[in-house]
Image 1 (spheres, helix red, strand yellow):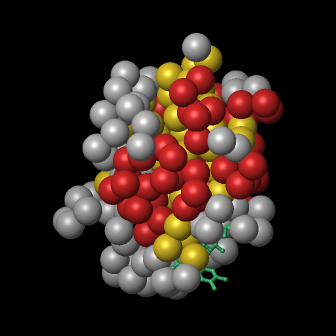
Image 2: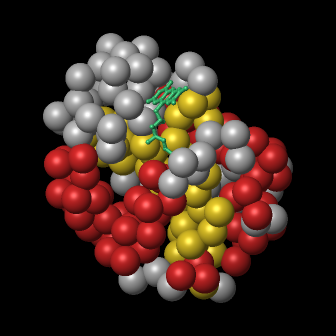
Length: 168
Ligand SMILES: Cc1cc2nc3c(=O)[nH]c(=O)nc-3n(C[C@H](O)[C@H](O)[C@H](O)COP(=O)(O)O)c2cc1C
């Protein structure tokens, strides 16, 4: 079984770009960085660590390409696997910043996989996100805002990928 697969959904290319940078930082081969729009969910079975990335659209929804893939993934037995989630959004959507990350978490929480690498949201200003439960200081994964705060991205990517490496 391969170690790490990165699965992303991206409408305008931002999450795809981030997925590729995460791949560079973690030494993941290009063939293991996969667009969910053109990948069968069963492909997730090939990997021990699943890194899942989505942007947020509508008013707090997953990126569209995720829906079919996720329906397949949530029906799988993912016991023994680890999942790390990242997302791209826009903090000016104050009530739904990166909420797609929360939807991925909620729908996969009963698959038996272990979730790793929750991460802080320091530097962003928003009121609510489904990716950040209650008063928690940490979101379910790495949240990024390439629209308003691209200057924060690289440092956060390095910190988060270090954490993923330590916890996987
Ligand atoms: C119509 C529209 C709705 C959006 N809704 C949200 C939202 O609810 N929450 C959020 O954090 N970002 C929202 N965004 C911002 C996108 O998630 C952000 O631009 C992201 O970087 C796009 O990534 P992608 O190109 O990988 O799809 C929205 C953007 C647009 C144009």
